[in-house]
Length: 262
Ligand SMILES: NC(=O)c1ccc[n+]([C@@H]2O[C@H](COP(=O)([O-])OP(=O)(O)OC[C@H]3O[C@@H](n4cnc5c(N)ncnc54)[C@H](O)[C@@H]3O)[C@@H](O)[C@H]2O)c1
Image (tube, rainbow, N blue to C red; front, top):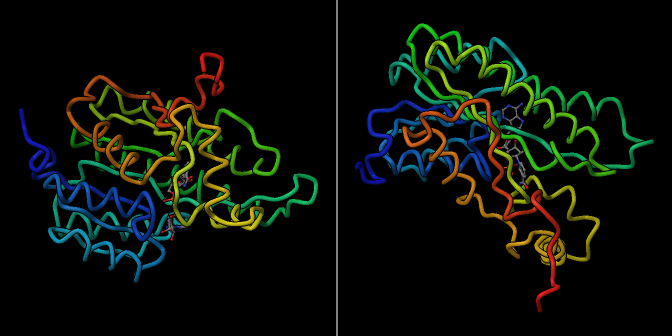
């Protein structure tokens, strides 16, 4: 059995949304596990900071996930630098909230463009390389919001519901060719993505405490909780998992927190 430091040895991994939050920690964990990592983000400066944190075989690439030409450029660089791409993690995402009846079409379009179209374009670009290789893993970041609606996050919910459905469809395409496609749906994770929501609370601490109360395990997730699950899905331990979206949610979508036994 391989140790964690060699679990991804020799693998080439592209992570989008690499400049921040879950994407950044996913990059550092892949690097720690021996992978060669492309840290891709629209924020190149942030992606470069992630490369420094990787302290190994990593490279920053500017990628706008909403643009097919940008995907081609990114995957060409990855292949030139590190060879065939084994793993793609579609982690780039944005969050916006607001009253449903007042929500601007521009905000809806942005959310769909980055969260859903960006994931679709990533799946398509990676599949074109992985299918001829006969192997590969694509992991798409969905959310508990794909399953549980929120009145002020309708566009975000719709974008993530789309990601979960897309994951199943692309998995069907890849399965006969040895390419696995999985989804991962986190509960609340303390990252910059929650900055938009913070303004509705007296403080960030107050927001996180309220979120923790909604999670049966009693805490919000850390980026490392999510990165660990991503590495598991990307590893050979998950060789028979495809099409599924795994919830990393401390039990949030399984039932309500209960104090009946106290
Ligand atoms: N934080 C949470 O509570 C939470 C919960 C469930 C799901 N998620 C999902 O996890 C993923 C990562 O979220 P996070 O919390 O790390 O957010 P984050 O805001 O910390 O990081 C998102 C990253 O995506 C990048 N990005 C935005 N638009 C881009 C574009 N067009 N092209 C390339 N990169 C772009 C940003 O520059 C940023 O570095 C997202 O898909 C998010 O929807 C987050």
